[in-house]
Image (cartoon, rainbow over all chains, first blue to last red; front, side, top):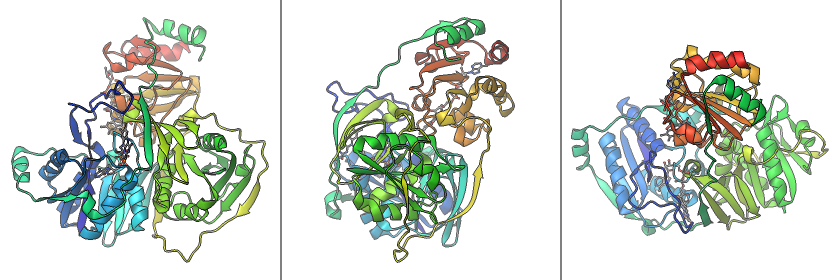
Amino acid sequence: MKILVPIKRVVDYNVKVRVAADGSGVDTQGVKMSMNPFDEIAVEEGIRLRESGAAKEVVVVTIGAQAAQDVLRTAMAMGADRAILVKTDDTLEPRAVANALKAVIERENPSIVSMGKQAIDDDMNATGQILAAKLNWPQATFASKVVVNGDKAEVTREIDGGTATFAVPLPAIITADLRLNEPRYASLPNIMKARKKPLETIELESLGVDTASRLTTISVAEPAERQAGVMVSSVAELVEKLKTEAKVI
Amino acid sequence: MTALVLLEIENGAVRQASRSAVAAASAFGSVDVLVLGAGAEAAARLPGVARVRHAESLSDSIAESASALLASIAAEYTHIISAATANGKNILPRLAGLLDVQPIPDVIAIQDADTFVRPIYAGNALATVRSSDNIKVLTVRGANFDPVASEGGSASIEAIALDTSATIPSVEEISVNLSTSERPELESARVVLSGGRGLKDAANFKLLDPIADKLGAAIGASRAAVDSGFAPNEMQVGQTGKIVAPELYVAVGLSGAIQHLAGMKDSRVIVAINIDPEAPIFRVADYGLVADLFTVLPELEQAL
Ligand SMILES: Cc1cc2nc3c(=O)[nH]c(=O)nc-3n(C[C@H](O)[C@H](O)[C@H](O)COP(=O)(O)OP(=O)(O)OC[C@H]3O[C@@H](n4cnc5c(N)ncnc54)[C@H](O)[C@@H]3O)c2cc1C
Ligand SMILES: Cc1cc2nc3c(=O)[nH]c(=O)nc-3n(C[C@H](O)[C@H](O)[C@H](O)COP(=O)(O)OP(=O)(O)OC[C@H]3O[C@@H](n4cnc5c(N)ncnc54)[C@H](O)[C@@H]3O)c2cc1C
């Protein structure tokens, strides 16, 4: 069984982004970029499934610019077997990403697509679900536990009031939530080894899929700044202020 | 123009987040709602709803069939909307995939029928986007739209069913594990009391209980507190947890990482209690108290 893991290169989660002065977008010049944190979890899950014998191969794929190779190498240093870069300089929406991933999936025939539940730049939380619809595959989103049993996966999902467990026939799309696992660090020897693992580049155009945007970004703005508040020196003062000044208790 | 809202029903009542979605949908004209499973009568009583479409045999926990049903009636609508809840985020993007449109998640403001504002980068920027799709598929954040009342309307109820000739992947729910709490729902509570890793363990986390009782508050948690096992995951507030905007948010022993702020910085009044004067939470707090929470919490319980 093969597992395909789509990963995205995003602004590192520790960076506080700034909106560009002209309101056209977010300043990403010279900002640290990393693998989307949810995708690290999805890669880890794929590797664990291979290590447990449930899967044979873990293939990572990204759709992005040449620079996105670095996250593919990181994933291979974690343990993924090989990588595919679908190369484009455009920034694609989830619908377009799903169309491209569908074409890759038709070539690779994985049994499980393990991906992040959301990318922390655009916070769309949509690509996995769109892809599942386009393939007419079942989906298990926001997964916090995955057990593969023959041709089924038993997936525990995070829902608003708690968790729920579903039996999902394979092939399926599984999107990772934060609690699914703790991704491993790549050791130096594994980083060296990853340099020799196969990385194939495909031009996006060669897939012949529709990647047109349906959303146009009109402007990007800073959210309203909160006024700096006051410091109080005691519980009594705090309670007094909440009662008489803020009138919330 | 007519909008369709996918409702969520809980204990026979329409969830507050869904009532906010109905309020948002009224910006587009006439509003129909869809109910999966029980609860059509409660939906019919929502003010401003023209028609309840009711598929009694379906469940909103199964995205495959829910999205297929939505797709079968989508052509009658210009906008298809749900609250940005776990179910909404599971079902609506799949519907968008079936319709081949680009969904617009987490809308916080509607400018016109095509133009929406949504947060990106954990709320550090707000993007205004215009959609060119014929049918707009969106989820809306409850905290940003005043919910319609639960009573006052009298919509007609009309049964619909899923076309069984279509092939739909067969996902099966095996078990559900819901946390029960007597406290108000996190997303609709007037006061939220949240604890972080500073509480040190699950036993200490219970120090929040008597104060929450006095304030009628819901209890929230940072991800670190949840990961350390102090609180269940559905209490997590933040970029990847619940988004709340209560009248009063009290942050106890949590640092205020951007991912946490993403879930609470629109609260009307924020109080932070932290031993570290440099903690980022103080930069968004209206009232900050630099002190040890283990002395503050008992004092606060006394003072209320
Ligand atoms: C300010 C701003 C303006 C923008 N304007 C436009 C615009 O006008 N037009 C436009 O087309 N786009 C624009 N974009 C970019 C585009 O909207 C997003 O990159 C796109 O929506 C992808 O969303 P997401 O990655 O958040 O998807 P999500 O659905 O949140 O991602 C979920 C998962 O999908 C997978 N995934 C997502 N993307 C990839 C990928 N590239 N390769 C591999 N796997 C992937 C990952 O597993 C990821 O965890 C803009 C972005 C910003 C920040
Ligand atoms: C992709 C991603 C998504 C995430 N999503 C979320 C999310 O949705 N929600 C979320 O909360 N986090 C999220 N996080 C995690 C986030 O980055 C932080 O790690 C987390 O919020 C920290 O939790 P904390 O403030 O409780 O812990 P810490 O950062 O450890 O802070 C503990 C605080 O307690 C204070 N303290 C300690 N002892 C005392 C005492 N005796 N009295 C008073 N104060 C004391 C300390 O000074 C410190 O400020 C996410 C991270 C990632 C990478």
